[in-house]
Image (cartoon, rainbow, N blue to C red; front, side):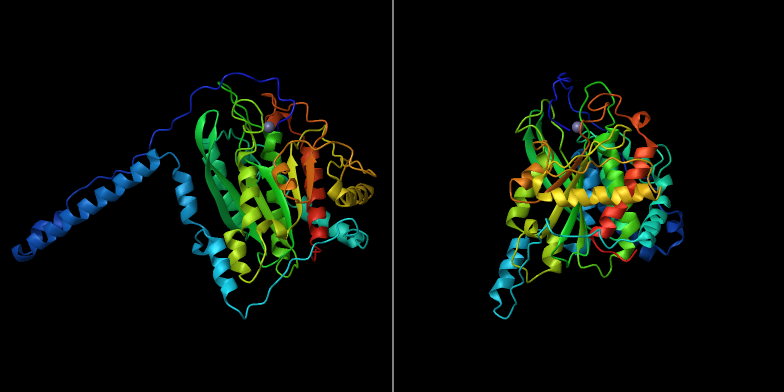
Length: 429
Ligand SMILES: [Zn+2]
């Protein structure tokens, strides 16, 4: 994260280039050819030549694709869910032309009076703790299924960045989320860059969605290896933990759970209005005008844009150190924040967490902190910014690595997040 970013102003090095991988295979002639009757021999030889020609053309095309610098995204796009292609707006317009369609409208929830905690009892907390406890090993920094693969350098365009893209997509699909992408290019102080926001949705037919978001890119430290363990490896892992634990309980949920892994949050050189938040700015604008393709497919009669469906937008950032602390930062979600603090207090009383991180308050106590929620807040979305204030001690230093992490904090917050989402979505735990 971003503001007060005055400590690192080194000039970036030139972009990292990766060698294109070769897919060439040996092209041996079949040895049985001489055994075939002469009449067929010329036919077989001709077919062989044709085969080799097609094979060499296709492998050449593959190599050109690799040189085109984004091989992973190419694969990701091909895997796009249910073969959906772009253009939700056209789809909607076609639908609107049909006169007999009902006009579904999205109702706005009053978050100041929404109560999702008062009826939770001891059995509920016990069940939640058992579920959270069952995935604690997934957060081990060297072997954990959900965290270890994310503790790599993820500078836009590098191998680690593509590896993490693939990992996030695979995990979302494994946990039964439909996945879509917001691919775009943008000018940066280091030239034009390609970006890809990754979006997952469970229950796409719902018109009330809880959004959990974090950024997956890591900040450039020229000549150094910066991991960004709190920024935002741990936030991503916590989101995946919620998906893994609760997805199977969501079949009949009225609400949907939507995940956004943002690209390009970090500045390439110095944090500014133009050099930062590339992914969230692009997606917020796009969603203010149209539906995500998966939503458009699931809700063909809906007259709304994707932002209309977002009930609460929760952004996680700078999480994972022992000094984490959260205060309400956005007035529109003050009561949601305070109910999370209530849940945490109940978990503490039952010794399901070992300490508290959420400071309840009668008002949102700080100004906005610049982060990926801001482009959405500017368009009227109600956001809950779960960012440690003050920032972790390791913020934007090379110490923001696996060694700086606190397993106690991560496990506690895993329990709190699972409890919050299960209660908010009213799931049968
Ligand atoms: Zn950062």
